Length: 230
Ligand SMILES: C[S@@+](CC[C@H](N)C(=O)[O-])C[C@H]1O[C@@H](n2cnc3c(N)ncnc32)[C@H](O)[C@@H]1O
Image 1: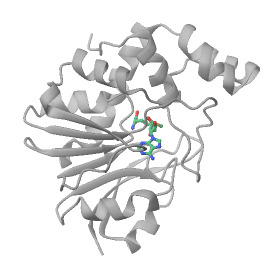
Image 2 (image 1 turned 90 degrees about the horizontal axis):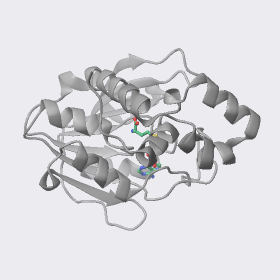
Image 3 (image 1 turned 90 degrees about the vertical axis):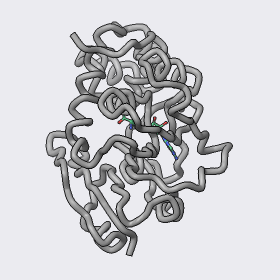
Image 4 (image 1 turned 30 degrees about the vertical axis):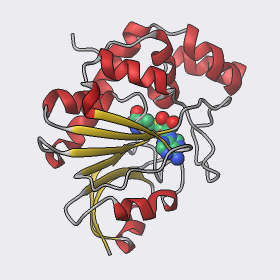
């Protein structure tokens, strides 16, 4: 059985980042008691970290398979809103020479809404737990860096692959990172993210390809790979 090493505290955040990992019982409790109690208490204490770990591994393995053809060894990865880093762990297991830059936010919103947030004010991460997760799941400390979106300058480097799963353009405005993405990519960089408006990106990038369709969720989003800013 393949699984991650995941503490209860980290499993709690994984539930907030990936609501599909909450059991039907937990989702019912969220409806009954509201988002505040769900975000703070129930999603931490009414879960089985072992089950979440196993399910999170499988979800991330499937996400990895959707982007695998765009990855190579030696790649420099940038991840915007990496969450707990499960995808990065699986990429690292498959492409041993890769390096990872993760841009995240170091706080957990009081009430998670899981919607579009045009104020860019919502986040659900904790850098101590993120570091712990990456190390327990065997990404060498020398191979990753975590950047605090709210406090640090974004690294002025080019990346081979940039991913933002269910984060940029899905929860907050693409414009926030547009300038940075243009500086940190070259014409071969694959920029992969989820959106409900794939056609719009044909005005921004020379190449846009849909690689996954999510028709079962409320948002009906598409995962796109974009290359070369126009
Ligand atoms: C829905 S979760 C998805 C996490 C992960 N990509 C996954 O697929 O499991 C969105 C993540 O984006 C992060 N986030 C929110 N605003 C952000 C911003 N402006 N820059 C970087 N990350 C952000 C949140 O903290 C959260 O971890």
